[in-house]
Amino acid sequence: MNTIVATPPEKRVIAEKDDAKAGEKTEASAELRKRMGDNLVAIGKYKDEKAFSDLYTYYAGRVKSFLMGKGMSDQIAEELMQEIMLTIWRRAESYDPKKAAASTWLFTIARNRRIDYLRGNSRIEVELDDEMLNLETTEEDPQAKYVNDQQAAEQLERALSKLPQEQRQVMHLSYFRGQSHGAIAKWLDLPIGTVKSRIRLAMQAVRVNLQNEEEALRSKTK
Image 1 (cartoon, helix red, strand yellow):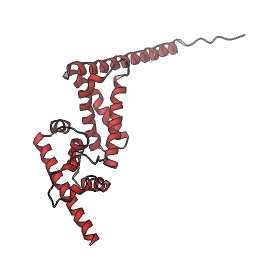
Image 2: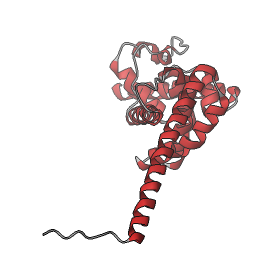
Image 3: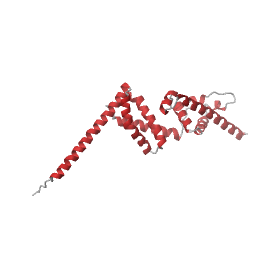
Image 4: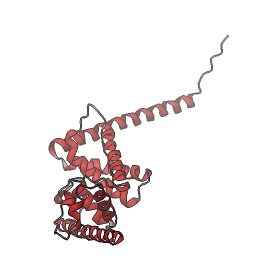
């Protein structure tokens, strides 16, 4: 004979409260997901600044925490987070709420940007016909003869690695990611004149570094 043990009234009340809280939490999560999805749609269709502000307030810190959790420094995580949020502002029209939640779409962009950053900083990939290789040359400029040589890419990579971080950053965005000066200025929150100045100084430094390396190679072959 089975004995039925009745649940004490106080435990039933606690269980009911827990169930109610769980239900409220689930409902709140669903409402949040919908609000963020609606925000992305509004940004994509209407460039809704209020919607972006709401999205930014909720996700900016989470994106930065995600990046730092993957080993990024506070400074780099902050810089990448700003780039990611700007990318979201610019590409929100491609978001389809029927295919993914806002968080899925957003963190996919964040993961891809992190991977892109790591690749770009572990070894800068250079196309040999890249605009960077078409600096103004003279007969004495050794760079011209390197354009179709793998050694040119290696030398250019070394020259770029010697630049200050802020110059490497604008060079990467301008020449390797194809961003305009205006877009770079917005991404980095800098005056466009500062961006142009950094690119100009970087190009001058790269040219000098390439020339110095060529002279060093010539002296070794004598």
